[in-house]
Image (cartoon, rainbow, N blue to C red; front, side, top):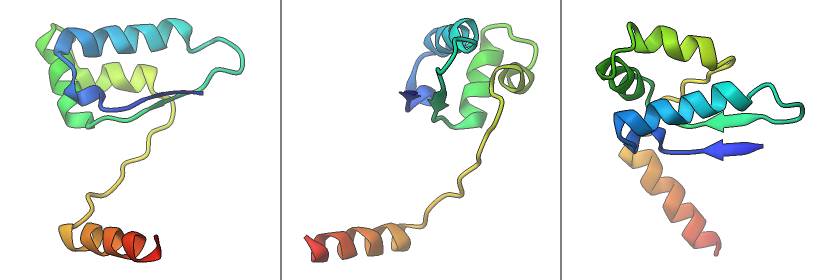
Length: 87
């Protein structure tokens, strides 16, 4: 399992390189990629590089996607407080 996080924080060229790497090596047996990124930011960065549609490019490479809802500040504070209390 290969986990790549914060892809949306890379430059547009680096983002494209990451997805090219994934595309080229994704067919290796027993290799699974978990990619974490802001879909809109990555699609926009890919579009800046001349990709006709960043969304369509992502759809060709990413087989299964999960959109996580944003977490509220209140919920995050509660989770941190509970974790610290248990420690």
